[in-house]
Image (cartoon, rainbow, N blue to C red; front, side, top):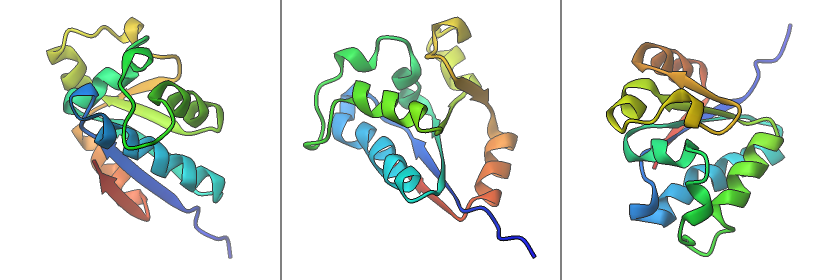
Length: 124
C-alpha cells in the first residue's frame, strides 16, 4: 500500500496594497516544503501581480518577513508550484510572457481539482 502524498494549496489574493498578507502564502508554503509537504500557490485577483517579472523587487516589506523577492525565489528553487488565474491576468493586461519563469496559468475547474486533491487549503 502506498502512502498518499501530502499537499497543501495556498491561495493569494493580495499584492503590494496589503504587503503583509501577500507575503503569507510564501512564508507558509516554504514551511511546508521544509516539512517535505508538496506546496502550490495560486494567485488570484490582485495577487497575480506577484508573479509579474520585477513586481516583487519593488514590494514594501511585510509583517517582518523576508523580502517578497527572496520568498518567491526560494519557493520556486525548492520546487514549489506557482500558478496564476488566467482571467485575472487578462483583466490586468498581464501577458503570459511577463510572468516569472515557472509560473503556470490556471482557471476555476483546475483550481477546484487542485483543492480537492490537497490535504488543506489556505487563503490569504
